[in-house]
Image (cartoon, rainbow over all chains, first blue to last red; front, top):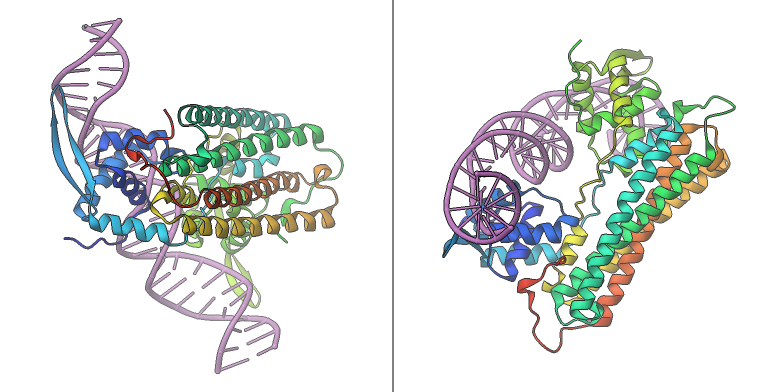
Amino acid sequence: MPRASVPNPLHHALLGLVSRRPLSGYEILKRFSRSIVFFWSAQRSQIYAELKRMERLGLLTSRLAVQGGRPTKRAYAITPAGRAVLRTWLDRPTPLPPIKDPLLLRTFFADLLPPERAAEYLRDHGEAHARLAGEFEEISRQLERRHGPLAATDDRALFFGWLVLEHGIRYERMYADWCRWAAGEVKRRGRPRGVAPSPADFVITS
Amino acid sequence: MPRASVPNPLHHALLGLVSRRPLSGYEILKRFSRSIVFFWSAQRSQIYAELKRMERLGLLTSRLAVQGGRPTKRAYAITPAGRAVLRTWLDRPTPLPPIKDPLLLRTFFADLLPPERAAEYLRDHGEAHARLAGEFEEISRQLERRHGPLAATDDRALFFGWLVLEHGIRYERMYADWCRWAAGEVKRRGRPRGVAPSPADFVITS
DNA sequence: TAGCTCATGTAAGCGGTTACATGATTGC
DNA sequence: GCAATCATGTAACCGCTTACATGAGCTA
């Protein structure tokens, strides 16, 4: 059995999914794009490639499952080594996520743009986040209709999924609120007036 | 002059900084790590490497600035081509950021962990975010003390920096609140009881 | 017969991290 | 003398995206 080496973060997501029950790449893909993708983005091609790699590393095993009337699929199952990697990762502290937010970067340099333009894209962006918040809220309502109050559900996976979904709702609401607020501030302030600015020494922190 | 080709996202951050006034790699680094790094993470080595590349691409020019008593530094200035790239980017719509949050991924699979352990790391993580929120609030207070009410400042770069800083405060507060809330829900729910769960078909969305 | 869902991959290349590597000056 | 600050890079590697590539079966 090959040594597990250093697993990459996507490994954890895939191990977690497959640990629940054996899945084909396509089934993983569907589940992934309905839940995990909202907090851990990845492309289809990467998922297929990593599944292969994880099998080489001994984290997964696969067998071809011939189906009547449908294309043959490759079903992956977690190995003891894979389960060990998953457990170890779950038990170790998590680093704060490095943030890469193009809208904030753009806003930081929005002094190079007419204020109306900045206010406009902030408003637009806020609407996109508000829509997302609405979608997440709708999903949450659907789940409650189907499973009852999620805070007390017996399904532990569903319970933790609900916690993460709630994060999504709060995040999107916060972002939408900020966009509206920022657009308002930009509009209120209006066009530059008075003395010339001194951008030379500007930094956020002292 | 070489064609500008497709600029990578870090280019925009560096162009934005250098557009204010010519800066050496080291000066860029300091400014970057005091402001931009909070919403666009990057390593020192990448910054030096990209500056070189951007000069090859014709976005920046540099000259060696000999200083008395200090190491010679290389001062970068933006070129007209660089300014054009920056303007174009500022004027185009921004995509929603792909999210990669290891804590949410971990929480999604926290059903594989004892509930006490999950509650514990959620609490810890919440404290880290609360600390960050506090630091950002302190920076905001310092800026207001030095420059007066930021909503009305004449310095446009400072104004937009303040908007982005406010996003950081709201984000960290939201995250800290969610962690506390989630830790509470996990504790309240306690150890698994009753019927076995059915994780096989679990997905967040229908 | 056209479009959808099911089903699985490869290749090139880039954006980014980690580790390695060096050296001058200032202040305690 | 030692640590901190100032100052600048290179090399290896990997995680990930984008684009390319294929094909079966089901339904309107």
